[in-house]
Length: 493
Image (cartoon, rainbow, N blue to C red; front, side, top):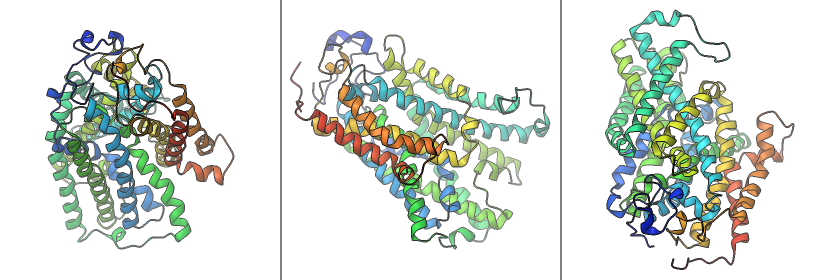
């Protein structure tokens, strides 16, 4: 089946002779007639995903660590240009065959083996879903405080081990319900939301930048100070930070085909991502740096958290609409980046019983159980444990998938066999599992050291600082060596 395949095995399983328990409407190939996303659609998607609180604060740890703002911006830009490469490459299969990530992973890991990368992606996304939902709930909580100031003095009414008050948890759950409603409305509502929100979010970011410049008569001391690091100190901070920047979107390098399956052409998905990802991430990180620099002049201290910043505004009306912007920015990121991937992954576990919506509901429940407010309690852990830690898992996965697709199979997939138990991709590809394990193992000691379970340093920590890169390289080479001699082009079904 070639790139113009239009038969939807979810709608008509018998037409492609697929096994019904491996397909439903949500993970079946998208017919060519329904692939209508233009470059502007992907640009809007990335604006919606990249404009969020973590993006705004992403340069904070770099500047706190001693980098100048120019060094921090170059690190952010370089990291996003690097991750854009596997992002566009991974999106190729989605555009060509109309398949989502779980089906794409079947080619390299096998029909059953694909559950491993799909669930790795899903669990990380559930954590992100919880984090973003907590941030959105915090914005709603701020609005509640404006309308009902006495709420701040209300008793906790929650067990101590939960760690939040009843009102905070209620705001968290309100934002959670907003996300679940969009899941219920389906993938088209998510695209519509991104298209509407993108220009609004860009305007809000620029407006905040203008406000800071005018109030501080400039952008303040951060943009005039130089780096506090010598050469050795800079490189010691740069490499793990670059890995963290790549890790920020390492999840989407895996499942970007969940979106590019709707693209009109390869040109649309590549240009849309090129114009949307690195530019928006770097711009919003700069806005975070510049505005925070101005807060030193305006308030006498650096305020990195925009939610805390807008609480300092004099006008309740401005605070209200600012928090509304935070809510919109957070929900556009959450439903696109942290719902679509895991929803399809959970659907892949049992296509006959779990569709996109049910997979999204599962994501939402797990996001609550992970208690995201505790994940955010330690900022250093957020960068060096959370971002780098999961990049050590996802780097090897994307290395295997891209090596299989571009080098072993020369971009040729048998779309029918991706949905059959007795086809060429049946079972588990043990070679992919071996490559994955060998890609992860070298970074495991560094992770254990980072979380305090292993007293080690030196080479172990140094290697962990490059976790995504080393994992990807090792897994790619091992997989290629093990798979040499495999047919690059599938025979016709």
